[in-house]
Image 1 (cartoon, rainbow over the protein chains, first blue to last red):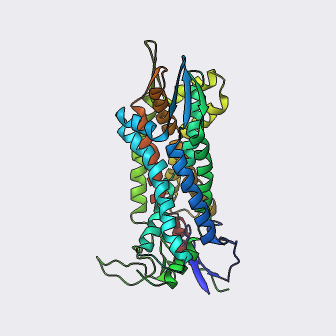
Image 2: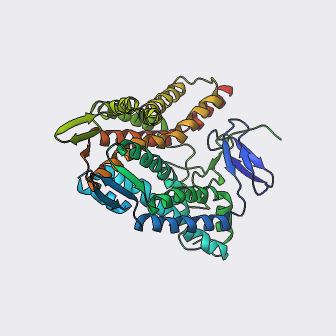
Image 3: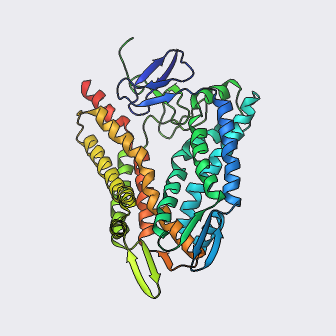
Length: 201
Length: 211
């Protein structure tokens, strides 16, 4: 019988064998202790690859079309960030870069790094460190907040200029969903058990 | 099912990274233990949780003042310069009829940080008073604080995006004001505060009072 302790109140629970889509709740404080996921390896790899493809599109294609006073300009995501660095807002630009580009990329590449070998029943070196890092940086991925920020910024600028969405913006919107689904299809407990079965680095 | 006990009472510890339940080894001063499965440093409770959380809460409260009193955006159109604080930006949205956006910014930038700080302060005080009042609801308050914190980052992104778009367009000039970095500090520090608080301490008080 497997045992676990609640992360919020430390109560120890003995667990029966669990179905593929279960939620384990703490009997004392009601918090979710963990959830089991269906087909975690395949689904995570699928969503992660989708997200990475969309990421590539979101970065390389134009983001927005701005028209004002007869002038029309297209902007891309990275040129925008570079512009903010040039404006000497180093702190803010770094914060945006880390929470909206670096952390999501680390999450996606980290997942592929661990999950693809697992699909072939192999454990890649440094899998444990990689997966631990993945779990620790999770609170710092804020792409959904960034998306809402774009919408609010567009409202703010709507009376100054005409702004039209471009390919990269739609890719970005879809990317956020794919990233969220990728992260939520990870069954951490199952992965740790598989890694343990396959031995140590 | 035998009597319910916590990991601490059973002399066990939950690895904070891989959530494996292991026996807590007897350690002498200076020794540390690593999780056999993932190598993480084993801790029964978050180290110095109360002290660190108070430090973060006070720091965030101090930064909250310049974050809201100084301007967060400075717009100049045809020679006319307008500075906006977070609050005056909300009022501007209300005046121009974007009530939805005004509400979103108001909640994300003013309500949520204050609520997080108030809740964490309350939880810390409840630990100091060693009360056993409503632990389940206090745990719920903590889970809410953890979940909601990142949305305060919204205004930081709005300012960054507006500045970037305006520089790249041909419109008026918008610059981020000094409040921006202070507000970013408030959001980041309140996130650290929520991470450093250990909700198990609430239940430790309960267990200690029964014994």
